[in-house]
Length: 173
Image 1 (cartoon, rainbow, N blue to C red):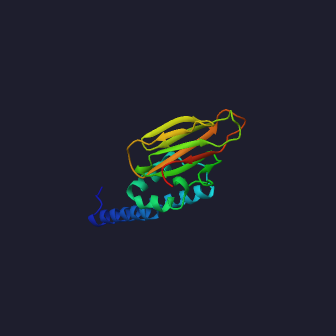
Image 2: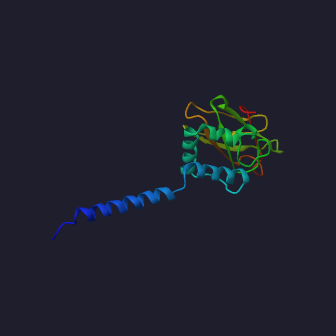
Image 3: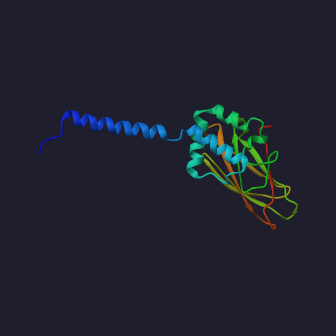
């Protein structure tokens, strides 16, 4: 049995390298993925990001800090998912915080004086659960880490008949 010639081996290497180059070129760039996610979240076309999407979003924010400023420009408290001046009625909210905005509150806005909303916060180096009630907001302080930082808030019904709206306040204005 004869070995393949040098010319044939080089041809195979070139074809494999070309296929890898084309595959890489056809992949969606991370910045484009983040802009797509931002549009879908801000318009209410999607509910929640997956863990991989949150990690990709955070990597892009760490690598391109000006993206955070572009996303949060003219947005109340850095909230870029569906909201009304920081008031959120959905199950999830996404915000971007800078180091100077590491502290914020989730305030109960329901009509039921005995009601509450359970809150889960996910961010780089942080996963925290709590509850906000009338007169007792849920306080969040982000630990040191990558800045700017993507923060995911998930809300579920606490006490009361249904999940009440919440207001995100503090930090940015």
